[in-house]
Length: 591
Ligand code: GTP
Ligand code: SPV
Ligand code: MN
Image (cartoon, rainbow, N blue to C red; front, side, top):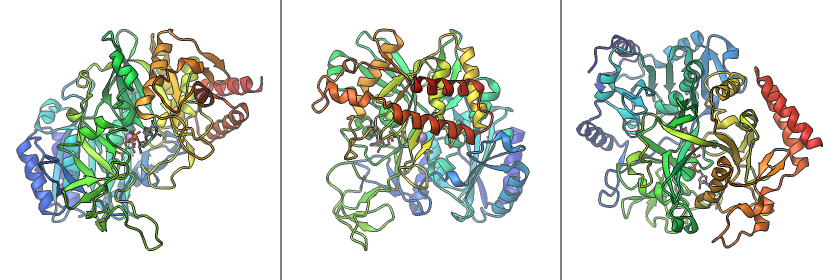
């Protein structure tokens, strides 16, 4: 498979520590993957779904204590504490290795150790990076084979080169002994006692964000929690946008957006390049270029339906692994809240209990069929709106960068920052209500800079400084915006229709990038004139509604500025440029 000494040594070390019964290399062939699927079904890890309705599709249920990323047990490990962030967990590297070694000792006894060589980015492209994940989980193998490019072809490209080491064992799935540790200084990730998504598919958040953000800082590029999409105009031209929203705040939905009829009739199309992660570099022409390093989508199932996101739904109709959704025992298919109005009559919920749409718990409360963070793992090639630039190793040029989150009040539907540094300030001060994508309380507003709070592999202040530094290198920087699809009325209903209708906001954003539309200057930045948001074909939205959505309440924003100041106070190494931006905002609000 390979003569790379570092790979072989990594495997030998792991064998000695974990004591697996055998080592199996993942070669990436369909025959081998099919054998793995068969084995996983035999072992009860996967349920084979109705192959006529859902060819190549399987269902997996995790243990009930292992359903989301565990930020409380996710660590950045470095020599010095201040090289991580006060808002993230830190462990001294040596201490962390010692602690983990004890937990891994003999943990794979009687199990198979799988070797997964994988490439983040198109295999062999100059911006791609290679990882080797060693795992005892066949579920991880099958998911990694969808989410990344895996197998012998990756080893061939690796040759004698360096790679990111990833070691994973589901061990005992013990919550108390669960650790997701990153050693950016050693290109190493170690994860134990989970078998869920972002905790264990080490190419995703662990490598492509935490390790890669650190590499990006060192090497002069950026790893961001961003979707990438292209808006194709009726004249055939396509403009690209990257957008950072926190987990479960609408990246997959926006990335696969279908424009409303008024736009479709004119010939507008939207193409998906990526739905979660962007690696961004400065191109020779002084613009920013973004690639999606992943090869599949690990998307939130609940709420995905024929109306909200038909492209995502279509993407999951073959060769997909569903995790923690409900099972329809009559049809051999899957169901989740918000799919349609026909929950299975003879179903099984995500916990494995008999379930139908009317099932109640002991207190008479409705029981959910699917976990709120249930997911689909689907190949990118399935996506009907996949961009033809998906595999382009040079990436796509960005016209705009968009930040956004869930804010019931405060943030308007959209506004534009006034400069690169002001845009970095807007990103750094983002806040959003927490979601089910991570364990912990849901719906609590927290600061989530650039949607990267859980994903920066080094000091957050240094990360901000890196953004400022990048700005100096970009001759033609993209314009930076902020959006909020989640403003609510007094009864708590979302005011903006969202989903496909977000096209109307993208339209304004791109018009601003080309100086084709005016804006109103406010203390926080440029806001659209209400009449410049196209509401043609929307039944419940008037120009007055849009006015309301764009309103900026000075008193609320003064509180917001206080909140930002408090947040900066919790960090170290916040660049002076951002403190200046904050001071200027306060001054404008007081004027
Ligand atoms: P991660 O995969 O965790 O990074 O999530 P994501 O950012 O890709 O979020 P996703 O697109 O999966 O959406 C998460 C939830 O937000 C789903 O329940 C959607 O239904 C909901 N959502 C997405 N877009 C909109 C929108 O425009 N308006 C409203 N109201 N809800 C939305
Ligand atoms: C997220 O939480 O942002 C996700 C899902 O995309 S996970 O892979 O678990 O990180
Ligand atoms: Mn995500």
